[in-house]
Length: 124
Image (cartoon, rainbow, N blue to C red; front, side, top):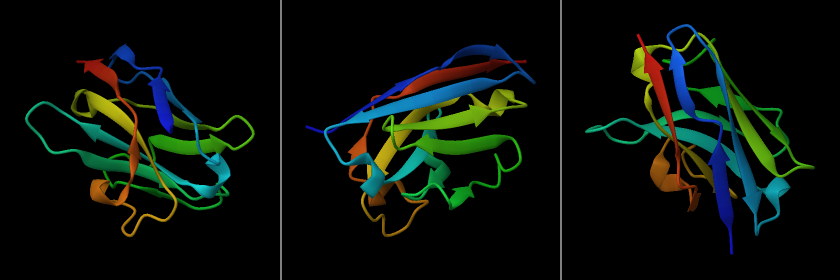
């Protein structure tokens, strides 16, 4: 079965950096668009970033543009999210998502597979 396992979350001071990883198994990774979403307590899950199958095309939420970078290594079936200049409002559970062809790349409902999430907490 398909498994997405996130890692790399933790507690960091504002202005710091974290690198999240999502290791995929049970699928042909290079055929899937990958995305990162996040959900803070009491809020809806929101789009963070997405990357196409080859890694040539990326999209970001305006709130993270210029600070976060999504990348992938198809040989390792892993997608990454490098997060720099972190702010307290970036605190959330971060989820990795996969779909062969998401109808709307920024919509959580367009992704078929999800990881369990990793907590990111940014202290002010």
